[in-house]
Image 1 (cartoon, rainbow, N blue to C red):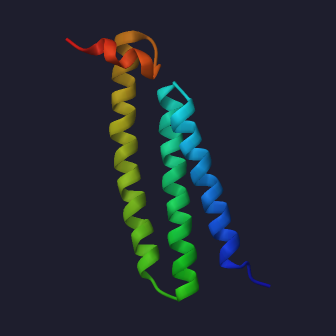
Image 2 (cartoon, rainbow, N blue to C red):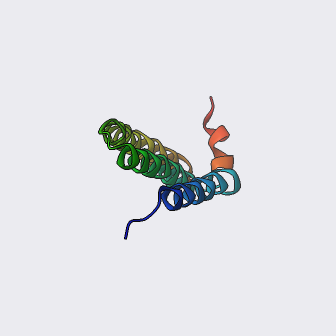
Length: 101
């Protein structure tokens, strides 16, 4: 018994919507950061589902590169968040504009 591709796509769409909701509604930079990662994983799930359906390796190669970019994003993003926290003792996105000049 195999899972149909529509189930994978529905789960991917749900994860992507949850990620967008987190980015738009939350003010904490860490939660926004995790929401972006959730959206990237939703796209990865879509790539893998189509690669499985079409019996092609290209989707899985795309996932490899997305994971690579996400790893770099984690390093840079967390460094920025730590710098903001050290400067302001908060990771509230509304306070980021206070770092100017």
